Length: 542
Image (cartoon, rainbow, N blue to C red; front, side, top):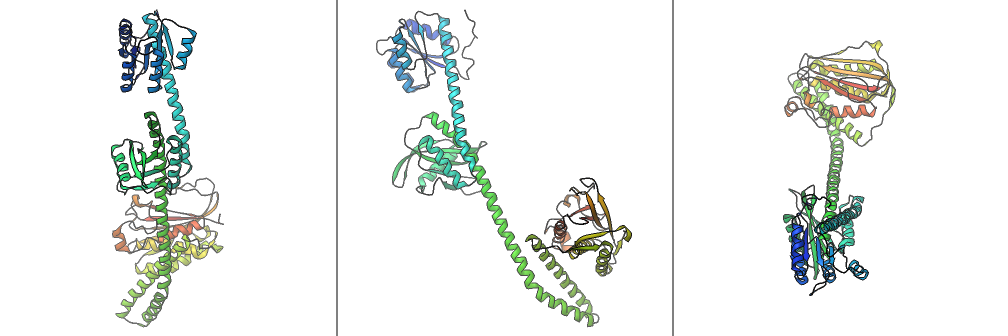
């Protein structure tokens, strides 16, 4: 006798259910008891008609039936049982096995048979084998269904357009349940629900349809009902749309024929894939809309800067021009007031110039006029131009680099001068009275990639480079702010803006002009101990 596990049903997630039918009461009870003893759930009856009634109200995995019974033969019972449950396994018990009987049994979907009289162990083995075969078949069918669903859902990844995707989902759903229209209600926290149609020519969804979709979203379960659309009654089914366990909406489709539970389960699997695609498309759409808004804001900002700069330049030039003339001819105390007026007008001119330069960089209207620049001459010129402002604050600007250590730089002279003056102006602004600002420059041939510097994270191409650093003894910059100081319109703190003024444009302009030369700029700073800005420029351009 072959050894079996104590519980033959233990390999299943639940104990298989078996219906035993035999008009012989002794055999019926005998088989039922033997199967229960090994862990199966068993229902038995001596009537084929009663057996059919059982199967209308309960799902069985296997039917074990006698072939000859007074009310209904076992083969007829098997035929009607398979009509109710196509996945049902059937074993026929017969005392007269003939070729004709076997042929008819196969036609009725009988899986196996037992010849009477049989041993209990033979019956157990046959039942176990048939159930195992059935489980393998069901698993194969399930895997094939999953593969089929994945093949269908691959169509959802062809587009990120919400309207095209909804149309694709309806097309795929049509091949599964024969739907002609579909609606998708997408819902996100803190947002109004968004209704999308599979096709533009679908009838408008009425209030009852909206409520049905909302109910599906709340219950998170499919709902089958009827719905009147465009004065026509339709059979409809709704599905929840989930992504990673989170609800993102619900979908509604029409159908023509009744949908078995297996088909509904397949549709739920398909709609899970569709929900992921819809969520991705929705996120992509939001990014596009946000980018569109940002582009429009950028366009309006650019226009505003252009118009404002143009409209302010002429009256400001008049104010500044007359102010300087009157300033030179005036005496105290009026001259003190005029000094402040001219300084304020000059500061306004610098702001307008910075904004104009920044806009030209953004719109790529800035062109380089490259020429050879004797570096030490440019440095002295820049220092000389800034010396007057430094003297007003009793600050000292020094050039720490010997002239013979410098070289010739090929770049746009005006723009590099603007970069250095902007950095010097920034250093002077944040350095207290009697502070020291040191300008240092050197030429170096870079051998290694990346260029090694504690505060520089980029890459310098091998070759000759020119470096200029501007150090101050000012207030310094907190380490947490160093990554953002080159962002346009950014100020380290509102309190500094009130105390020192500025628009947060200067360093952004510096970075833009340096990048235009294929160079780099970085900062080393410690709060309370000053800052050092370093500019690196390829000597002959790259």
